[in-house]
Image (cartoon, rainbow, N blue to C red; front, side, top):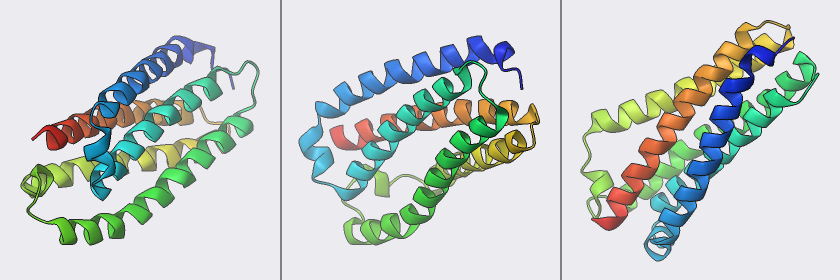
Amino acid sequence: MDTSGWHDFYVMAGGAAAALTGLVVVALSLHAKAIMAHPLYRDRAFAAIVALVTQVFLAAAVLVPAQSSLALALEVGLVAVFWFSRSIWAVPYIRTNAGRLRGRAYEYRRPASHWALEWTVWIVWVFALIGSSAELIVGSATGLYLLAIAMVLMFGSQVWSVWVLIAEVTE
């Protein structure tokens, strides 16, 4: 599969994710004590940083010269399995900690519609990663489009997540 037509997109996506990762690490380090003291803040920070680093990895994977679609499918598939597993793990973790900490922070006063939108976008990009891997396994270029959708949603999701985290910590 020829990925040369995607070169500029993945250079831009990987570069933007790398730059934002650095900015996020600096911003979060300014509030490290508050973030590390709260299990949901800590988890949100971890997920945001790992998701941004994941985007750098995915962009690099697409940019590997002459890589087979099967190799790219396996790389995207590993990422998809990680994030799918992480999503399943996060639900009971968030419920347990939210119940224990309810009412003490901004995140618990956010409307349920904000949580629903945040999780919907999250799940859509996870399933786009899964679909991308499946399409790439069979050599379909649709996999690259699904990966691009996942990357854009992932990026937006993590920008939002970090914004919410900083708002919660500074309140």
